[in-house]
Amino acid sequence: MDSSIFSKFNLYDQFGYLMVGAVATILFVINALYFYQVAIPGLTVENVLLWLVVTYFVGHMIQGVSNLLTDLPLVGRFFREPKHVFTELEKESLDEVRHFFSVDKADDNKTWNLCYMYASAKDLTGQVQAFNAYYSLYRGWSVIFLFESIFLLFLVWRAPHMENWIFVLLSIFVVIVFYRRKIRFWNYLRSKTFDTFSLLTHIKA
Image (cartoon, rainbow, N blue to C red; front, side, top):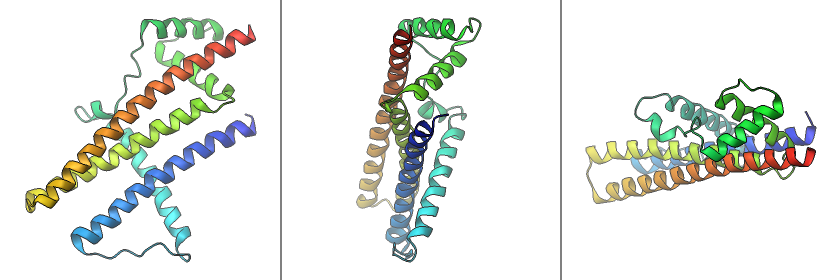
């Protein structure tokens, strides 16, 4: 694989893990300090490397949890995109992919994966990988604030103060915003993948 493609893919992914982990870590510190008065060591020159490792690890954990949540009966609907559902126009594109790779018997899911891999490897603008990274980023953030909302609801149940209710509503609002952004970038990713494949194969033809 071309080193520039690998570097682009690696940069997008690692940045996403760090950003997801950073938000989760910041929320944990705020919760510990504000609700339980537990002081967490702040970010300094001496411990910046340690914090980077922690946020990177947490980012991987959150994305792993996101994948697990998709398999749950009820909650999974919130995190699972309709990856196996294609419009008539997209099915026509999938037929072109099958013809291009000579895999006429491949199902839609496998054909989509071939299309995505080809488009991402050949996408010089990096938009396919960028949209995939944003999709993962917003999915991770939506998971974080979903758990934050559950935590805050538990606090409200124990101490139903108006201030706690405001935090709950704000957290739920953020979940909704990031969920909508996640869906939007999934649609961007799918559309850009098909467009890139079509453009590349027509140029090659």
